[in-house]
Image 1 (cartoon, rainbow, N blue to C red):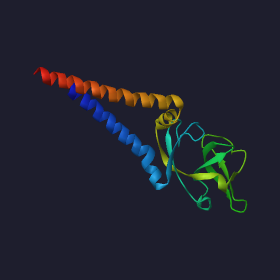
Image 2: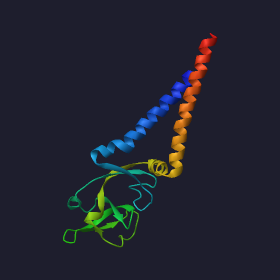
Image 3: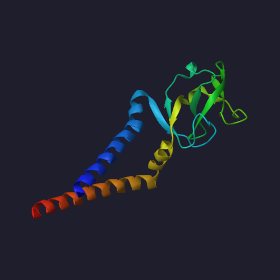
Image 4: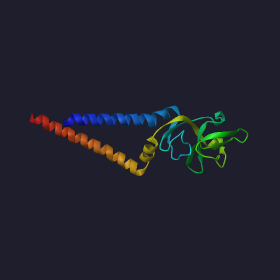
Length: 165
């Protein structure tokens, strides 16, 4: 009985791990990067905690109305909508959908990471951010070790049951 319940649990865990791996890693094979939405500046298009998918794009192909992901400062990444393209200066004016005003500075073509696809997967951004943190990695490793330990224990218990019969 314990073995059957354990098999069901491990099957569900394996399916979830494969599904998450497909969501986080398979898009990268096609030049698409999943990224977490950390602010509400693009609500309701991209919700806080969602996972947005960003596809590499030639900045000269970006048009007004596209949502682009770009870097500002050192490592800050932002996704906002293009409201103006200046081909001569090779820059964009952007604005968050939920913001009343356009962004303060222009975005240089070379700061564009890609064009955001028009959908998100709710809440998976929170998971992505957490799994990239130190505590998230520790919990993930601990979870894997616990699952392996439990598998060993269940196997030993089922062997003992067979030997008694």
